[in-house]
Amino acid sequence: MPSWTKMTTKDGKVFYKIRVSRGRGKSYLTTRWYPPDGWSQRVIDRELIKYAADFERRCQSGDVTSRSEHKAQIEAQEAAAARILTVRQFGEQVFMPAKLVTISESTRDSYQRFLDRWIYPVIGSLKITEVSPADISALLLAEQSAGKSHSSCVKCYAILNVFFKMAYLYDIIDHNPMDKVQRPKARKDELGDDEMDAFTVDEVRYILACLEEEPLKWRAYFRLLIDTGIRRGEACGLQWRYVDFEESRITIAANLCYTASAGVYLDTPKTRKPRTIDVDPEVMNLLKALQNEQATTITSDFVFTKEGSSEPMNPQSPSEHLASFAKRYGISGLHPHKLRHTYASIAITYGADIASVSQNLGHSDKTTTLKMYTHANQESRKQASNIFRSAIKVSPAKKDAETDKEAKSQTSPRA
Image (cartoon, rainbow, N blue to C red; front, side):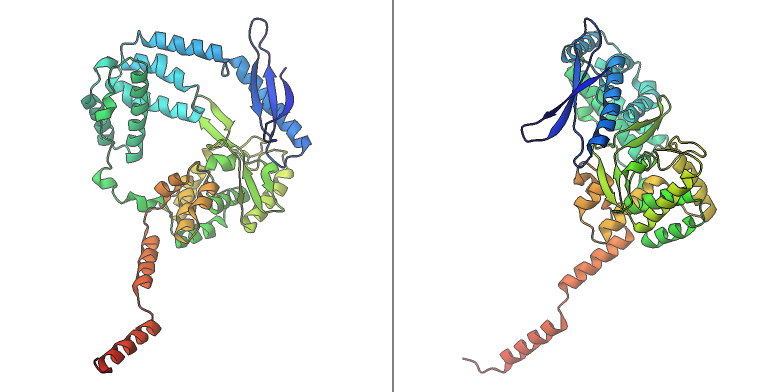
């Protein structure tokens, strides 16, 4: 059983030091847990038990190790790396085992899919010391030629970057071939697709009108996505204890994820920090109605559940329902992430500051928001043009004053 001790940092921050015993001959493992400000002791005690139990589970399964064990693991990986011959062998025996320590399950699943579907079939049998920039460029070109989206090609490029950088740092290769590989450029037929990343205000109004005909659960779910810009998994992982009806706001403290290998599981938000977001009172009314409806059939911690079950809704279900919804109402390109883009695009276009939008979206860095969402759509281009014209136009009063000044200068006697 885990044990814990309440402690305080030098600056007065309260934390709990959790310790787990792994049996005779093995050292204790410890971690720290910092309760959020404002939590009552009752809530802290309840969440502390959950966190400690999860930490113990990860310790027993080997996900958490001591420093000496981690060092031994690295040494074993480096020793194994010395015997690696092919790209596939390095990926299976060193690269993926090392990445498992630092990446989430969804990222691991993404890495593995790109390796299995694109990287290994093309260069997996090559000796890693003999892979050339031309080999990698041909791989990326083949992916583009197969019709993969620009974002997928860039993701493959990024994985290859990390892959060969690790091989270089482990002294498997004496140079990194990725240094001479260009980042994929968008195909000509992909140019201009950015404008489809977000809906206009009028399109959002149409979507909202169509949602009025949907069942309460889906109406509340998609109104919440549109109003806040949160991720679909964050909405699926939302629990009633994080819905503040009095202040009309929610706290995003979890992200519900799915991979084929792990199934549905609850993870932390991408930034690993909770964030609180204001919600439209109309949406809060829908959530209250959903809570009342849910209470008549089931008892669940989660806001959005499977039909007739207390289990949270699969994070892939909203995409499936939205596809059917879009077909019924003739809405092109409708998917949950586009609603997220739309929230940011409209908010920024109509004057919201980048920092606030970034915090609501859960970006760790506001430059991410700038890069992803300040593309020029028709509405923002028009507004930019009007701002420019207003700035250079001379006001009527100022124009009259300048005319009078010019007339006086022409009629005044010369010195």
